[in-house]
Amino acid sequence: MAQRDNWGWRARIGMFIVGNEAVPEAEWWAMLPPNVSVHASRVTARAPWARWRDDHAGVELEDDLARGCQQFAAMRLSAVVVGHSSSSILGGKGWDEAVVAHLSAMLGAGTRVTTNGLDCVAALRASGVRRPFLVLPPWFTDQVVAAGVGYYADQGVAPVDHYRYDPGRKWRDLPPGELYGHGMGFEQEIEPLYAQIKQACPDAADGVLIAGTGFRCVGILDALEQDLRRPVVSANQASLWHCLHLSGVHTPISGYGSLLCR
Image 1 (tube, one colour):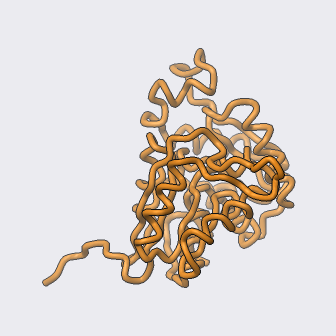
Image 2: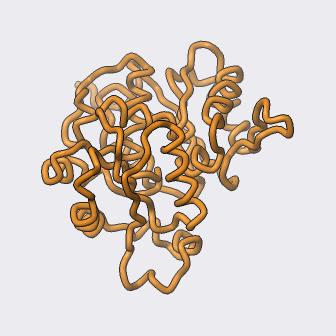
């Protein structure tokens, strides 16, 4: 009898991710329905991964993004996502749409294109969330935190409050921008994250958004929803959900939040 080989005959999804991160692929593979595959292209550029042209009429892709797009164009993908919350956040208003237009022209009409920013907003709206509690990774600097709050407000889902995860005593003497370089991305624990979100979530929030594709969290989404009795959306969960729908795959997926059961 033939064994499962993860061949994506229903859908193949391309994902641009940070060059030194392991979380996005791990979380996607945990959540993927049968016969759907994910294929990563790694980007080492600083955020945002596409620069606005001087006239602000469009964007120019960083080299890694352009190279990955050329490779993806030959892979008959159903959808491609720029899986980088920081690029959407720092790119600002209109950046997502400009990047989608540019990549779509390179990939061709058969491949749908999205970004993590668009995915998260679509997921919040599908979940009926208009006033989220925004939870951010500890390595987001004050600048990125402020830009993130402003980004979602501009998209019509203004956070009631926001919270940058406290990674614990071991990391507190390091500034946020140095945490990942010192290995925190590979030493993430989801139990303390669960406890902090449960304690900090304000009553006025009608849902939770955990931003950051490198922020390990999908293993606690169900538990948080049960305890908070509100939808909980995460960056990787939202991008997977949106890419599946763009690919015409509507298989309910249990265990990773109510969004994937839609």
